[in-house]
Amino acid sequence: MLILTCPCCGVTGEETEFHAGGEAHLKRHGPGSTEDQFEEYLFMRENPKGVHFERWRHVYGCGKWFHAARSTTTLEVYGTYAAQTHEPPKDLRDTISKKVPGWTWREFQ
Amino acid sequence: MSNIVSALNQKTYADGIAEVREIGLQGMITLRGDMASAAVKSAATGVAGVDMPAPSQVNCVDQRGICWMSPDELLVLCPYETVADNLAKMRKSLDGAHALSVDVSDARAVFDLSGPHAREALAKLVPVDLSPEVFKEGMFRRSRMAQIPAAFWLHTPDTFRIITFRSQAQYAFDLLKVAAQPGSEVGFF
Image (cartoon, rainbow over all chains, first blue to last red; front, side, top):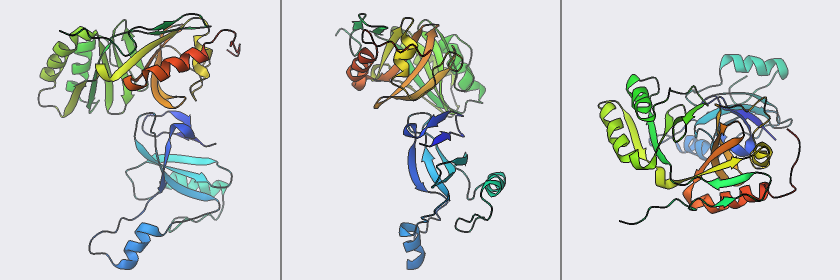
């Protein structure tokens, strides 16, 4: 079971109070993009063993979306951060590096 | 004029370890807007007659109060018959501010769960730490109660006031009734 803290309202709850929203930081390719880019946006997903970044929604609480970094193997949640960003914050990436040296996820490390 | 009744018309269950009661009509106004704005704050406090609560807190006296729902939403409580007047007053004081105010009184049902075992009866239903050291008076929590969304706070030291959707009122009542059934004391708190 995941224990998540919503960065919008500050409530810490277990995962049934939230709803998973899929992979984080997808680049939304629309009209004018190539077929490869569009395919990547629609279908290509990470399937990591270890560090993963996801979107979550505090569906039974404040209703806001946010991002979460967690481990797919241990279910440890490294941290949560605002939805209004294109990349995980530096301090969170440093925190993960301390716990999981050498982790990579897409272009982040 | 038709007779306005609440979802369960003050249905009560008093045979268990805690008393469950639908409190009847309660006026509720949803106010969404920028909570840092003075206009939004004064619109809420002017109608409710209580101070603005801190995040995840509630200020409630009898039927008047303000609940902090999310970073941009408040639930303003007032007596049912005063909702229309209060809404007009609120919109007047919000004049020009980017905000939304709607009467949601008839969309909700409100329950009181009271008695010395109220805390453990509710703790069976919500994924929230309700131990007396953690969940105190003044705190407001939106979560789920079994399969439905619910918001609750400690209205008095041994009474939880619980808000659910009106369409789920019967489910909520049955749920609380089972959680409070005779002989089901847990004795954890």
